[in-house]
Length: 77
Image 1: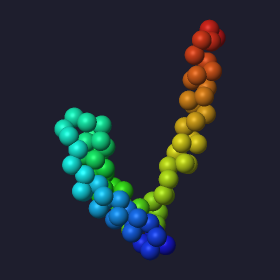
Image 2: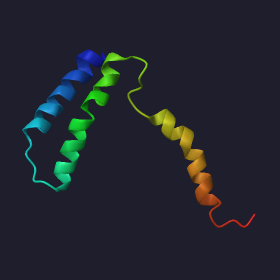
Image 3: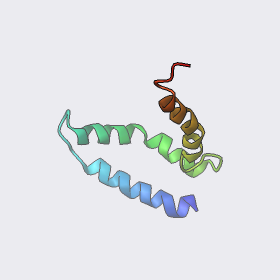
């Protein structure tokens, strides 16, 4: 399913990214450079079924610590 549905979308997105010629130092230039640098890592989840499509599990794992840090920021004990 990843090869048939997701890979064509990523290929099309990178076709568009490769046609962009933003100015140096612009926010778009930074985004294009980041996307080009992360392409290999992004395509990793297409070939490896053990790699999750999202990082929701990691986000949910960290969330309680972030909430507690905020709640206890001004606690004296």
